[in-house]
Image 1 (cartoon, one colour):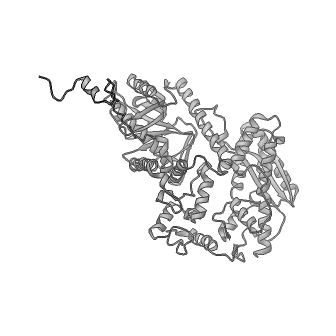
Image 2 (cartoon, rainbow, N blue to C red; image 1 turned 180 degrees about the vertical axis):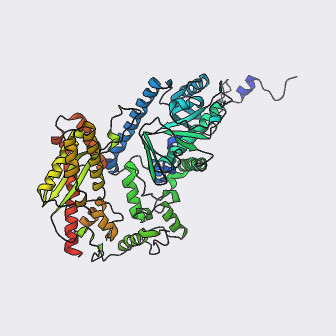
Length: 602
């Protein structure tokens, strides 16, 4: 007997309008609305800058010049970091342990290759893509290192001894894999000299390695409590003593998810939830006013090309993190009291939880910006720091430097710390003069420093005004040159450095006067030279204007470095000529600021 629930093909066809046999369409494919999170996506949330994620979602490109001021530098750092990783992996493979690289794309094929190499027991797997389908997380791991080979990678094995040969259930030998992320930075270690601090970008690095560790745990059947960062160098302080190492394979920075970093897993989960909610609802949100607390700008964090977008939002909101030394914690304290802007008269150092010596300065910054009559305070400056009130024989100086991120990588695993002065700018009696190195070398640095000292001596050893860091830069360069001359056995030049270059007592830091009094200006919220100069020019207090295409010291350094790599005559190159204009602004504006204060605030 026929099953009444089944119909012949002809019966199905009879149900069609034409009554001719037709194939019925199949069910539509089920849409999988999975949201995959890449490990690096969590960065902004982890460094407390989630507004940038929203800006990326809602604005295809930054409509500002932020990239022009810092983009060159961050692009350079990215390229240098990639070069560091590549050169380091080559060194490890040739001198320490066999390394196999997988690929720089996350595909099913490359993910399978990572699993295959893990089961084969390859000592170190480089650039290892993975997907964690269960939690929809993915990434490319810099180094996957077998637990029994970490001691061959670095001098100080951080993995507890009982875990060296701990077997992962899904692998074939007495080992498991741990994550090692490579970063082009000096490892900031805790006082124990092992675990990593949470400074700078390191909370983001810890979140990334946690996601990597979870993914690898799913593959091998064992999730390590540890992950590691391999940096250029390492440093830490304990009981007043500083320790520093320049060999990148001395030690790894330890991340302990069950110990000192036990908060990272939950913070990372929160970051993932933020990204999911942002993707789903973010285009409906607004920043005027912020729909969520995450949409308030964090003006304490550098955000590359998004800096100016953040600044516009912060200015319109009157965001508390615009103010000198005010951070997320202070804004949160204010929000709990219903205060969401420094413009609110209730916003004081007390209500935001700012104590100590900075409290009164913060109040003065907010007070002058909440009124319309005064452009600068105090009307009469009490401090006589550096005898600033006396118009004496004086010179204004500024140094342009190449930080050691520009150093070559040909000494790996050693990464000696080096800086280089390539330009010294002087403004003296209304005239600008610069001393420019013809190459990036200790000899050229010596030449421009020596010529600068001679110029100072020839002009009666004037007071040397600068802003904030120049005396430190000079002292470091002086020590560097002295050590170099001694190493060469050139005692004549070493003696000259000791006897002739001792100009420390002539330095006078104008920024100390501004912070110490304090001198506050309407429209200015911090004590950076560019911010102060911009506000003073707006009020007609000074006339000096920046005529250079270069708008930051970071951009100047990258552009100078490129010139020194390609030009046969760097000092005459148009790029360095333009950087000299940038340098001239920094010294001329010091002169104009000091002149204004003497004429109006004594």
